[in-house]
Length: 495
Ligand code: TAP
Image (cartoon, rainbow, N blue to C red; front, side):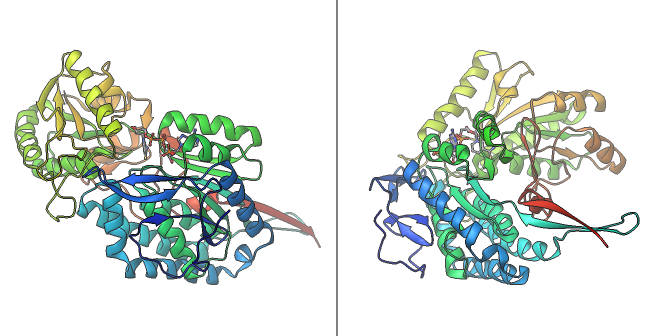
């Protein structure tokens, strides 16, 4: 396997022509020497070449991670030292904030404001886990007679972490930060469409002092590299974010060696506007809830339920504001909606919209590929509102992962709770009402991992993020995540 000249992880330009695998603290080419090209979805233009990892590369990375875990020093560092290095990672990321934002926009086509928020959150994740790990301790337990019992939290081992394309850097941070804080080693597999910022993040980890072999990145296809990681007996845990079908496949394969598994999967989140809601806030929050990140969010609030008494008033404002959303240069601060990740995904979205039309729905606005001046070769879709839908339609039942919202009327609290829960998913949800008692009453009955009340924001470091039902299991972004990267050892002694 060829290694590149820069054996040590001194800083390279964030934006460059070639990105390597990161294995055992080195930038390396793939064993096959093959590369693939990553494209800018806003323009369709190539950005850079990326080493195309294979099973052999995955094997090498697993061995490096195993060696680092079994014989390395990282897990034995005093917790304060690991915390200091996590803070250093955050501080290097801060110093390279604009570069990371630029690279993320190039690789995803997302709007500047979204990329800025996500890079900032990735930084804050490392800061959060630097603090959280210091307080993550075992317990001393009451025992009868002359027994003494205490527990220790030990790192779970080598973790395969598989990342989606919708939040490439932020999802990598959600996974790498708690894992290495806990003392684990990781092999990260970024999405093939968006590998760049994850590679740079791994380089930054080394620059900050993470020892070799602790953070490895193997780019390459999910079906080859991802699958190899999931099946490998030397991998102790798999953390996956992505589609529900792939998540189910991973769980099945990981069960053969009883790996610990956490899955953050799809969603079809309800957004409920009660008759006493602050209409303007609900309109703005609903726009954000579906069109943020061009609707490519697992917790996108893509099913909108509006009380019939305020339906016309709400829809007039919601439609008007949707029509005014600016699609355009992702690097401009006033652009609201960025590009779709790929031509393939754009076609998936369009097929859903066509299926809705065939089933008798009404397209209130949008409903087709968008033409954006200056970005004619990119992948753009008009923000789309669909009405006259019902719970039997594909567009209401399935995750679209694009800027498409379905809107339905309701007239009763019980009815809307039933509708909200009528989904195989259970990730996000939102309630808009001025009645605090109702908000809490409804929140308690919604089958979802996250309920937002009078707010469109779903994820902050410290707040658990994860799903009910087929949206997966395990919570990220919070203190409990550290339990998912550790084993509890109970030590009993007699004195
Ligand atoms: P997935 O296929 O689920 O991809 C997510 C990650 O898993 C990628 O890194 C992918 O690698 C990898 N992967 C694919 N097949 C694998 C396998 N057999 N074993 C192990 N890893 C594997 O999602 P997608 O194709 O990018 O998007 C498809 C749909 O998934 C979207 O339309 C959307 O509905 C949903 N999606 C959901 C989320 C979240 S956050 N819930 C995120 C992304 C997509 P490659 O990139 O190399 O294929």
